[in-house]
Image (cartoon, rainbow, N blue to C red):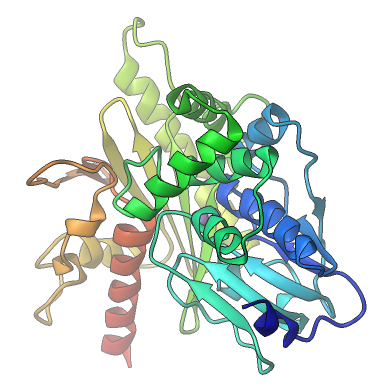
Length: 364
Ligand code: MN
Ligand code: MN
């Protein structure tokens, strides 16, 4: 395997190992640790970020006393290894003019192209950090305590502490070995602190909260974004809790038109999880976006037979349950509410993609 890496065109300068924009814990921690591994193998690699890491990631870097990677403003003309994404819409600015040496990911295949030889490693597992762990094993390179801690954090974050449908035994095995190296015994304590940091919106504007975990996608010519937001924990001893939660959701709805305009998008959606209710609210904005969400999430909305809402739901649920899962769906004013919570990658994105494709086909 080492020989294969020699075949890549590393050039003379540095190669940046960089994750997606709106950096999350998996993308940042996988970039830091994969850059460490590449350096162990003798390649001049440096971790970078494509924006300011989110609060959860900032907490992890502080807790494990790891310096935040440098921000790469523009990747034009650079050699890069992309972590945790494969879409230009999510990549660092200038990525189409960069030379891509490797892609390490656990999402679908996006629209990134590269005419030179690449190493493209993608697996349908819980986190990119798990793939990085596998690479260390493959090369027989020892994992430092610091890297082990970062890899655990990335896996916990992306799998919501092993409760997401995307979690596999491979992720669980990785964490069980990594936690011995890291000397981390209480993973639930770590995850609880990560969750607390995630919903710490102090000092952030509503727009910043929305952009904190928003992803861009291209469907043909159509440009969309889907924000994923958690309703912050509120003092449940106080009366009127539901109204306060709805007020937060309405505030998120209110910033969507501005973000759509600034980023020149065709549609913008939000997936807002209210963990107290174990529910997800879907919000939409853009011309005829109501038709898209109806087609995507409410069966029988399509006039042409199969509606996107008919896509099977097994993979859709965030919480891993034993046995049967019943997904409840109801319309709450302008929002569609799902219980239990649903997943952006497996549920929201494929349905919206399908609904937009159907809409374009009808229009053509
Ligand atoms: Mn990510
Ligand atoms: Mn990830």
